[in-house]
Image (cartoon, rainbow over all chains, first blue to last red; front, side, top):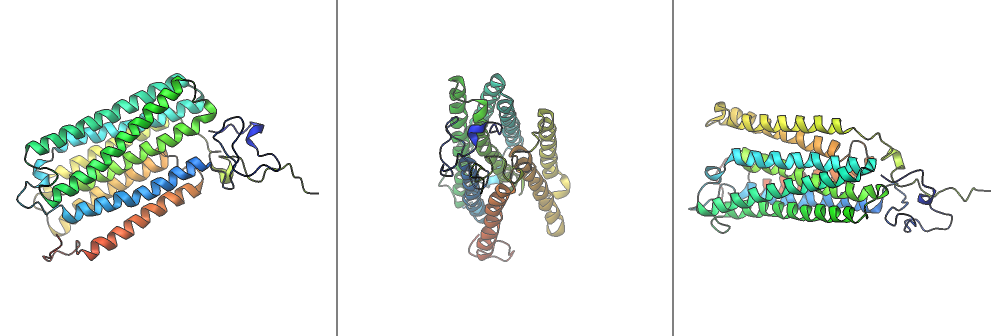
Length: 214
Length: 125
């Protein structure tokens, strides 16, 4: 969080609202009291709800249209996907612990938790790649049926988001190792965390709607 | 004379009580995660209950409703606790939930157009 006691955080008379802060470079005084970066991330996540809403709706519309291909629920391995879901859920915990660590100024814990989060995300992606490979072996490819197209598009888009999240986590870790993430810049880690948690909440919906509801 | 040295806006993170929140302890996050893991376990077990084999009508409705309720609880808990919506400025909650509610209504309307809620045969499904 921003150091509220820092007098440099307060806009000097005549300074334009939102002018870069001299000490931290990223925190701005805004009329809402929320930094532009954080607000932008939340607006972005709000718009992402519409993207994933569209993909989930398409899946619901086409999930019965398997043509001559296999039915989706005959291929799903719920036990395996449950473990993947659990891994992603735990990664949300490790992410929030990373944010908590930098807010305390504990850089060592920040780096550890960021690395663990990226690792758990990688495990989830590996599981998804394995699952896709199994489906291909069972004769369900992207163009096999409208249902398979909708399934691969939805879960593939989610996987792409997780992959981008892993890149963001590793980038943050590298910045931290170079001493570029200070306690005053904890909000940067929090913003990366917001994206990561969003990826998790999307999977909460996908897991239930796609895998559990028959 | 007006005191021109006063800031035009509250410092970042201090507006409307935002971020001036108490930061939850790590133990709090661990408890939340355990709760979420337990709900996930119940969800999976619920979907495997033999009661739902070949369920139709009210039984099928209860099966799906149960799963959706547990999903919604997990969603809200992660958003409120891990994403700090509970502790942050209410503006952020409004922005996020506005997008979410808009998405839900838009796609319910779209799916209704494609008659997905109708059990009668149609050319869309």
